[in-house]
Length: 89
Image 1 (cartoon, one colour):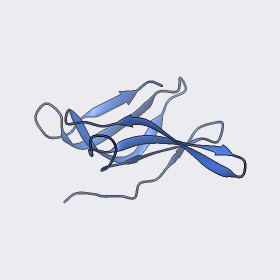
Image 2 (cartoon, one colour):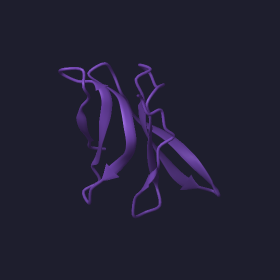
Image 3 (cartoon, helix red, strand yellow):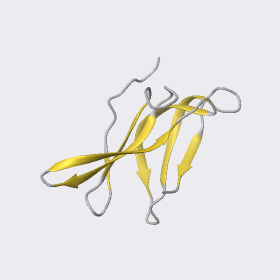
Image 4 (cartoon, one colour):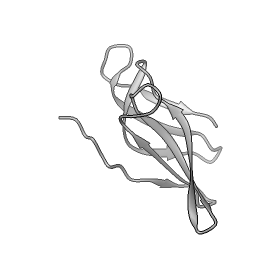
């Protein structure tokens, strides 16, 4: 059974929020995004559009101290069972 979210957001040390969608984006396989606080609201930044190699991200992204972002996908990958991915801004 697929998990369509919504997923929890992850906050970095400066108050930016990171999240994922498992559909949409340029390829309709999901997106990784950042929300930056600005002027009492939020600025949306599309960090990555997933494709058929790594698609349908699931869960909340994980951040490390170096600013890398990690996560998993529900499908696609080499055998079609998902991938573990790393995004370096």
